[in-house]
Length: 555
Image 1: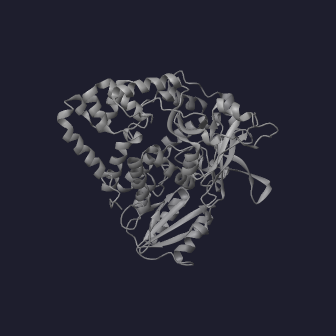
Image 2: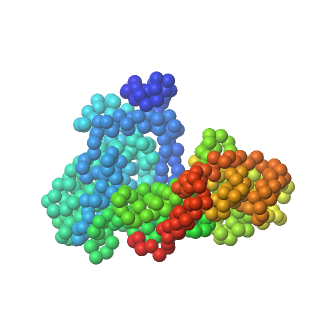
Image 3: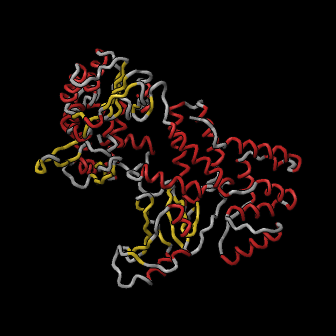
C-alpha cells in the first residue's frame, strides 16, 4: 500500500518527491493515536456548533492519496450528486424542475452515523475488493475515535467530518441506501437525488402525506440503513410557492433568488459609482453577517464577487443575459485592483484602502480599542455587525501604546489619547486581507484600478497630449495615491517630488503601468492620435455609464 501511494505521489511531483515512510504509515494507522486529528467547531446558521476534525499534515497526505486511489476504483450510484466528478448541486436540482411537489429530507449526524465496521465491510465488497487486513488498515486511517454523546463512557469509531476520504466513503456506504430509495421512487413515480445528507424527491402527485405508504417505507429504509431522519429539516414544497433543491430554485427552471441578483448588482454599482473603499464598507458587514460563522479572517471582496458570479453561471448558464451583464460590469472593475502580483512572493504588503480611525468607525459602525497581549504586544479589537475583528498594530505604534499599559494585565483595554488621529488600512499579503493600524496613512506602492481610484481619464489624456508622457504619468500617480495637487503638470511634478522627499517613501512607478491600465479599458487610442479620437473616448464613457444604470431590471 505504501509503495502504491508513493508511486502516485512521484507521478504528481516527480522522482524527487518526499516519500511517505512506512513508520509514518504505521504511526497514523493507529486509530487510538490522539495526535492524528485537530478538533474545532464552527457555528451553524442556527447558532449551534458543528464539530470538525481536521487530520494532521502527515495523515492528511496519506488520506489524500488514498482518496485519489479509491476514485480510480469507485463511481457512485446515479442518485448521488455530491463529491462526484461531473456532478454538482446543479445536476441534482435539474432532475426536479417543473414538478408540482418537491420533498426534501435530511439525515441527522450523517458522518458520525457511519462507523468503522461499515467502512471496513464496504471496502471488502466490489468494486474495491480489498483483502480484510488491507480494508482494516484503510478503515483505521480514515476513521476517528469519538465519545458516544449519549454515553461518555462508551467510545466508537466513525468517519470524521473534515477528512479528504470521508465524502467518497459516505457515497460508497450509501450505495445500498441509494439503490433502495431509487427503487422506492420508481414504484411511486417519483424522481430521487441525494447530495451528501440532503435527499430530494419530486412528483406531479402528492405522495408525501404523513403515515402514507411512501413515508412509511421511506422511514423504514432509512432506519434499516442505520441512519436517522432529521424531522426538523424535512419539508414539502408545493408549486405555488418557491421550490428549492440544495439552494437552487426549481419551479420552472433552475434559478437563484431575486435578492441574490440584486445584491450582486448593488455592490457592483456602488464600486463603479463611489469607488472600492465605499463598496467594501457596504460589502464587509453583510459578508460577516452571512459567512462570519464559518469564515475567519478578512474577505477579499473581488474574489467573493467572482465566486458568486461563477455560481450564477452554473445555475443560469453562461449565455444568460443577467449573468453576462453582471460579468461584463465586474470585468471592467476587476482588472487592476492589483497589477503587481510579486508581493505574494516576498514580505511586502499591498495597501488596498486606508482611512482615518473616525471614518472607519463611522463607516463600519463600531468602536476600536487596543488590548494587551500575553507576549506584551498590542492588538486592536472591534466588533463589526456583532463579529469580532482583531486589527494588527504597526510595531512603531505598539511601542507608543505600551507606554499607557503600566499596571494592566493581558486582555485589558488600553486608553490611547490620540486614537482618532491614527489610520487603519486594509492590507493584502499572500492571498489574504487583514487590517493594520498605524500612525500615518499607508500609501499604495503599486498602481490600482482606474475605477477604484476615481481617476478622470479625460484629464489624463489631455495632460498626455499637451504636456507629454512624464507629466501624465506623475499626474496619474497623484490621483492613485489620493494626493492630487491642483496646478499645472510642472507644479504637480514638483509637489510630488517634495512629498516623496519629505515622507521618505520609495514609490515605485513606471510609464508602462499607465499603458497597462488604459489598455484594460480598451483605450488604445493613446497609441494613435489622441486629439482626433476624442469623440470615440466620449462614446466609450457614455456607454460605460449607461451599462451601470441602477434601473436595470435583471431579475
